[in-house]
Image (cartoon, rainbow, N blue to C red; front, side, top):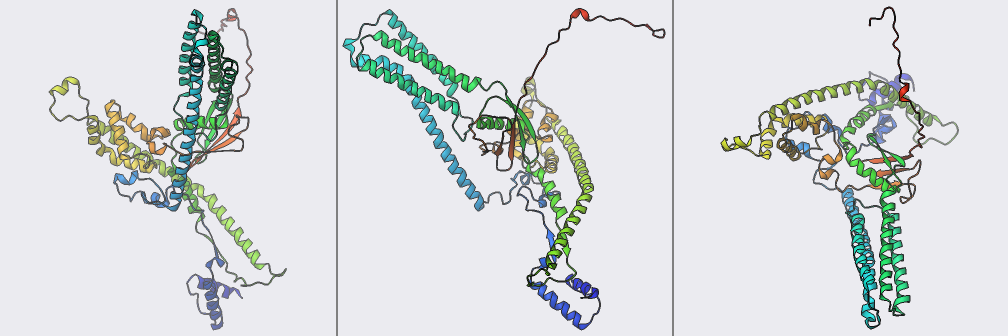
Length: 538
């Protein structure tokens, strides 16, 4: 096919007529166009589309920001892929799985609590049983308990009271989290106490119950020795559970996978699961809140640069069923040339996209500064409309007096529009509801705070605990680790804390050994001489 007919075929594909040609060539072009329409148009064009973005905040939201209604309710809805009250099949499956996991976790928690309570009752009732069984089984054979024996009663009573308070202070705490595995040291201590009490019962049954020992003072001393041993075991529990981890040995680097936010923490000898728990407790305090809307701009920009790249084949059509053979490599070569053309076009557009990124960021910063200035002025003017009344003024003032909540509701409309636009511009509209803003405003009015103190919560992102409980309460985390989660921290260990929207990647490094030297400086060595020159004015 000559060049003219080839160009004519391409023009007909694009929907335009390109002059008159011979009747046979037009017929062949039409037949070729019909055969191409029967197949997919991908035979003639290859389009590079952006990968499907996560349902965080669509491009339509960003493009239609200025055309949205000014009603505050739009800025308080959760940003999802579906409506606020709709549930997809995936949501139902996830909710069902979460309920099953929560039921299993509750059962495991109650089972552990029941075992701990049973072991505690066994420990505290054993010394009392040692003292009471001889009086119940062979009271007529027992020797009289003298002054020393009665003094041991007081010793047993106070030691049991001290042990009860110590156990309450160390073990009777509200659980902070549900760990995937048992705490190794706590399980070891429980097994040790159980074996210890069973050994005492075995000795008591063989040497005292079987022989019906008449020396009651010796039985009381035996019970005292049990209580003393239990106190020593409790001291061992304090060392293993509390004191061992106090000295820092490792530094943990926690990095959020979405935005690269990083914090460092020093921890002692802990297992991987307890180190993960310590990182999560510090995460809610130290990390700024995760805002997925801030990641939408980069995704939409990448999609815009990659979308719409097409490469057309104007040299002819591929044979429908090419015969296999060494000489039929034209389709493969054509596809390879198309791939190279697409890569080259994408590279040229990527090289030129930095200017667009620069101007987009500059325009965004300009809009943020402009709306921030409007917000600051609006809040300062709103705060000038209220005044705290003194106690003597309250007696003379008429009935037009408001409490902090009413005062906040009165001045909020004057700043609502400016605050709404600023939150939309900075992608924080889903983090603050109208109710939470009014509550914070009433709090600032009650405590006589300045407008700057009120605005600080909205001008900069705060930690996660600063926001509503629905954003952090009962969040499910998954610990991913190559090593066993009950093993201790080691140099180079890496584990991941995975959440629904992001992950925390934690790497472990050992703190270096510090060699500190000493150098003595004699206080009498601080002597100075004044050097005078001819031009010095003294």
